[in-house]
Image 1 (cartoon, rainbow, N blue to C red):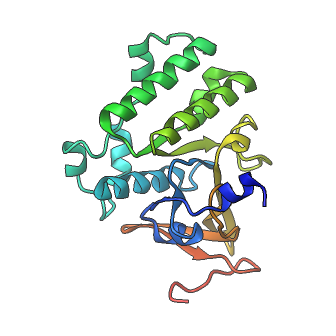
Image 2 (image 1 turned 180 degrees about the horizontal axis):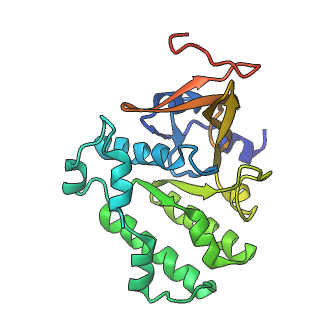
Image 3 (image 1 turned 90 degrees about the horizontal axis):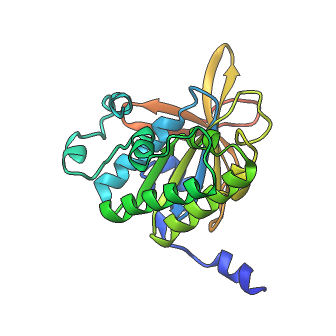
Length: 247
């Protein structure tokens, strides 16, 4: 076996998401330090999934709009924010502080942004990071070369700090690739796809792990249900039927 193959199959420390179904799919959680693309069209549960990932991390280890999305969940406690264990930062605020006023970022601006994110991670001792959405950042990067450079440098910087990150990508329902620019999914360590599936007049949310470096995982499609206790995942059987929760 080649040295790289041995490295890929070695057991890595896991970042337990706290979402039982997802941790089971990934055989114990996301390999720590991975950068994972959470991609899907509007209304498929991407932000809710990411917020639960952050909240469980805070418990174990214009943001007002995001807060309204998690207040109904039983697992959310405002003390997590007051105690500084859960932090929301608006990207436009970072841009303003760094003087990044141009609509299109060049190589220099990419490095400034990476350094700023790294400083925040170091200062707050962050172990879980969500960028919602990476699509809005890529819009300013414009070129595939800049997008590739940003995600590679971001992933390397976060991995070296043991920080596991989720990057939310917005795509249209008809999109045949997993990201808006077609670059992000090739560079990310993992790709989790959310979607909508029409069944007997109902619109079901679905989730599927397409790839995840550093672990064996199921590639089956699951029904994603948003409940008061968080994200629930139920296997989607062949033919589009759903397995019973107790099955």
